[in-house]
Image 1 (spheres, helix red, strand yellow):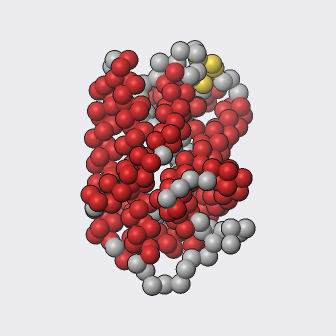
Image 2: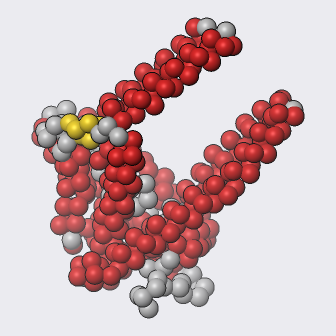
Length: 322
């Protein structure tokens, strides 16, 4: 395990300039403007507050329900005040690793007032963030797989294919959730109408099963991005490769996942503590970029090594890559 991570850091040491991507994004989020959504979501929060008051009057719930709603509204307004829409440049899938340190926002704050504007910019940020992630992980993958970086080839063709492949996976993933979740929700709702006690038990059971299933998905799809950028395969084959690597090397893979999680969590706490001072903020940004890049490259080394040990047929490549 240590040798695998060391190989990842060795790969990063050969292309130290790759740290410019996470460092640059971190500096944008810390020093750049805050795009606030407070003004855009305030009408929704006000409507929610009014609906709670109306419902409380109808059912005679009084202060307990109103008190709970006040807590929810207070938390929601605090979140809306602090949230920076630019943080969505860190994509949910294949996001560039950032330190997540408190923002200084030297360029001020800008209020987004239209809900449509917020949704549009949120989607745009995620799309751009996913592309940046594909560029970043694609560079790491070239160094791990080929021992060299071909930036021209990556920018001309492959980064776009990685981007489309991961977009297809996201679409399939959420489509699958809707396809399974919608009829399940309708069934649970029907059972609650006919037998409230059974429906309540079924709701709790399904929630627990969903959480357990999500945990297993996170484990077995841990190498999904690695499969896309190392093996250069489409979304379905990437899922199959990740599941195959984890399934054939479950305990080593679980150990690597746990080690990466522990190192990442521990270092994040250290960066947060250092960020109270300007010099500590600089160390946190650069240190996070280096540690996170080494861990990401180490994950790719593990995936590539274990996949090469498999005797199955070679994976199907992305369209146009051959």
